[in-house]
Length: 318
Ligand SMILES: [Zn+2]
Image 1 (tube, rainbow, N blue to C red):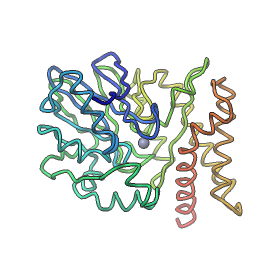
Image 2 (image 1 turned 45 degrees about the vertical axis):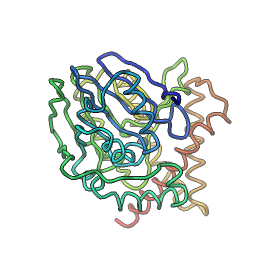
Image 3 (image 1 turned 180 degrees about the horizontal axis):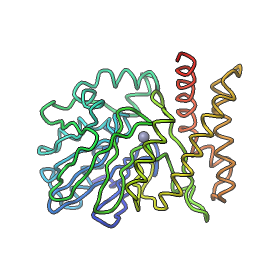
């Protein structure tokens, strides 16, 4: 049997499973347990699904025991594998944001949108085949929707800022929030003596800084002890990290505006946000050389620069 993906077991019956996208430690999903029932938060890409099924098998969990699959938003690293995973979990229901549900039922637009960002030729290699989910298996989670997961209450919050089709899940049992991408990205390789480095993710096409700040306000009102990041793993010190993220979002807005008229706008913004990240990593004594940091963050910096350009163009059009 092929090797199983890396997993981390946290308290409160929550496990982090690597979705093995591009490299270990880039993206994960979470497996939650309540009694004999299980639920996934996120599902990775279609290429992640065999690994997730191996984890279930190794743990003696029958596919029938998985009651819910809950991708935080429809970006492919979170929801691309939903159709394939759902086809292997006969009793599972897919819980989606109201703006995301239709894209899971008919993924045509999702595939077109992703092809525009990544290029059609890269899409299949990076994400595999994207399969539809039967409509009758989809639950729409409006803002404030409460799911009784075998006695474990999960509260769904509309969470714009990174994407309008994004929800977050408050798990009262662990006092934690499953944040998808709206609490930023933070890779464990960059953890240093001063804690984690966390930065915004402004992937095209729905970066909305003001909405994002309000989403963070709502998170903090819940007084969370943990945030479960899809990229990557559980973090604490939520208030401090939220401040860090707020400053990061403000810096991104400023840097994008400063380079809006540069001859090669894309290259200028990408280099500016990369330089900003390098400076912060250094200030935090992160254990990475400049070269290692550029490699670790290069993919995100590319997508963040693209998303900031889309945001600039929308400002201009408004
Ligand atoms: Zn993501």
